[in-house]
Length: 293
Image (cartoon, rainbow, N blue to C red; front, side):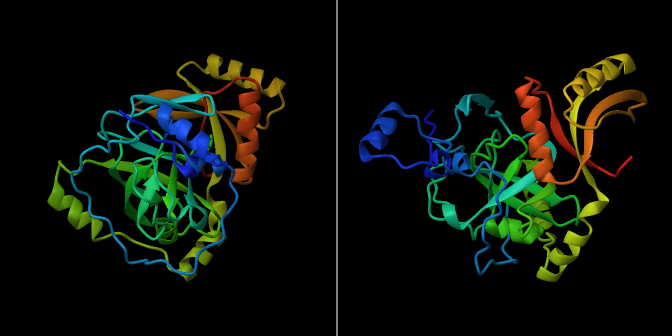
């Protein structure tokens, strides 16, 4: 199945000959995401339809953008065979004017005024409910692009989706992404879509003041045995990456010892921490948000 690198993911000027060569080699797919892997906040456009909604429906997989796996920046990503059971929490970003009108990985044209998103591994197109964990705003998006190819981001939202969730001004937000299977209960899903909540401009400002309620941590391991967690913490402390701590959680009546770095001040500091982990070849990590301990 073809996998196309879009302009968004390629992120560099190419001569027509080079573009032709890429087309001939069928190396098309992860475009503008490569160009925008930093956490820089884009200037906001002037308008967004805060009442726009997406109603999930059954759609065939796109001809483009659904290989078994693909490689970006030396990292291999495996496309999921279906959306069933997919739930993830992490940092969302958004992309806007710079990529408006560019081709997405699915072959469709990116429209920042539609309620869409990019995801690294969910089959495209598909649908997911995205919930801002800090203000409770929740919407359904249609995923039709690949990305974001940044270590600390799980989904890249269109401008309108970001406005509805209240994360435009900051550029990022802590969200839950829950994939939707339209074949399960189409009527119930349509009814749920009608209850989507969106942040008004005044609410977005208020939310900024409440960002301190949850703190950012980088989880670098989880163990059933306390000694194993403490061993990892000691090894990481030797590299002076940050404040490495072991926290105990009880899951299904079983104690789990999680090794966290933090709390961190913001997403930028989390990015720096992850870069340090990559430098020492520790790539088993994820971003988590929690109240301070």
